[in-house]
Image (cartoon, rainbow, N blue to C red; front, side, top):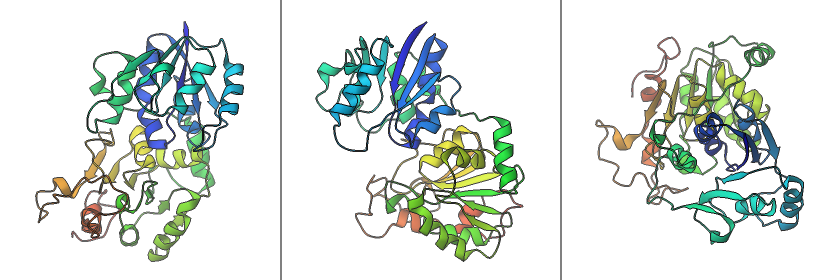
Length: 335
């Protein structure tokens, strides 16, 4: 059995979308270790095909060559192949410094000499799961669907701690790291219309946003942003009756657990980063035949709306989203 080191992306959603690649590598007999930043390491602990997760002691930004060289010495001789998933130069340094003979990745940031097997970057914005899975060199990557797994006992323990029943609550993830153009502004109105308990999940940076949403709801709405570990947030998502989110990392987590979900897209595109889940329903006004005038500006992939109107999200009404939730959950009228 060969040993492989996978250098993980730095965002939760991207990390989830690498799971099909790792499943392919494991199936053909590769023993997998994943080098990941601490904030995405829990994603890989929820992948049973990963034998080891190595938390990388690197900060976001900066080359940190000394730290990479020290870790490279520790890992020297352990691996036959490295798969470098990010396109940055610095992400390809560790496999070289660790003396890994076969180093696979996409061309990018003048790293030709750092990789031994290089793929050309596809034009445009291809589906990200296929983008990562192509590094396996195998056909049929379009059929890949990410999956995460947690121990049932751990999910039950987390739900019990919060006084929740499996499937008896709704999770909302109103944040998005990328910026306002991916954040739907009507979560508070939707939460106020729901009969079931609502859990608001996100990072500590999103606590204030979630508190404003909680204040709009008269029912059982709990702001847990920044108050759970990522593993606990995963368990709460896995145990939810449904999840409502922007195009974000937690959207991909919900999809990988196969939870019923509503995914809201604005400046980005579900053709590029869709929730690969048969239980997912996507709301994207770009493709809504009843929405006029057409959104010719979408998708713009910008952090802020270049035109200043944010129509792609502002015009998604709470009623439109409520209609996609289980009938017992919502009281909102269509809009």
